[in-house]
Length: 442
Image 1 (cartoon, one colour):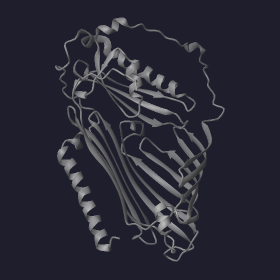
Image 2 (cartoon, rainbow, N blue to C red; image 1 turned 30 degrees about the vertical axis):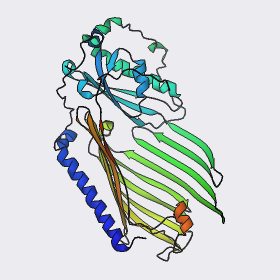
Image 3 (cartoon, helix red, strand yellow; image 1 turned 60 degrees about the vertical axis):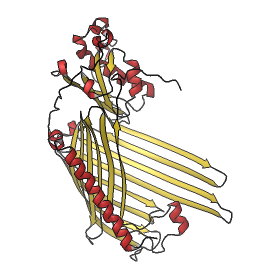
Image 4 (cartoon, helix red, strand yellow; image 1 turned 180 degrees about the vertical axis):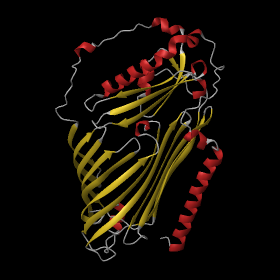
């Protein structure tokens, strides 16, 4: 076991390492601040001298596909009239695809086409929206169609344009002039799932039920989540049979009103219970106000928000807490800062959230999360994903403590003053500049 001085030393070491990592990134990317805050995307000078002097390649445009979970292999296999290249430095067109969920349960893809070299004056943005009822194939085929449409303007200087035919398959005359929504933007989802896992001496069972209700308009946003989760794990040892179970239930809601392009007000509300957290019942409300430094409509490329809320709540505990409480009324407030940028050179995300109780300001929690990826030079990029929390607000800890078995199975909340995780690395890529061929064998 670690003593107090050893734990304190570990905490100080990690904090120093964490701060050192940020300083390293700041020195490495001294121009990052100006690049992030620039409202326009600077067009780098791109040299494509390394492209082989082959007639086929000269007849096609070179495209760098920059996306996350966007069916990249399917896009490359379906679009054969461009050369997909491995590095942005070899591209004539840089395609950035970002994705967010919609109120209907579908997805909204933002496609940003950035032209370089001879196409530096040609940039455009397209939006593709899917529905919750769309199949996997319908969604990816629709995305490919929008990618194709966005690439067509860049073909004006290429010979491949002569091989295209333009065909319109719809008929605007068949579209009703007044489309009424009988559900008035309300969407309901009900689901249930279960899973089992087993070995000779270790078995587990999980069942979860859920309800989701939502409605989104330009002015109002409403969300309601109801969830019930039960987990049972059985471990057999030579001496005994151990059973561990946890139950968690919650009903959580959100109501938001749009004041302007930069301001929103609303509230969170709900209740929960959790055997792991020693909470028999907790319920409350949290009036909240948020300011967006950029217009909300620009969320796909840049987003910086500041949010503040006050949360009165009532708690009932399953067991008496370490503070001698069986129940209590609490008043908490939160301040949240969120930043998210997507740029041609990479992306940067940062979130900082602090919470504390009014009755005792020493009972607080501070959480910082940072994610950064950057293409340093051609073929070389770095990434960092780290999170650190200072925890001093565990009011629900049971006075009975945690047994060794419960600690190993992680079915009871344990006292801690911090938590952290870090993931970092680099990637070096070299070789052929082309990356268009898709081969799914094996």
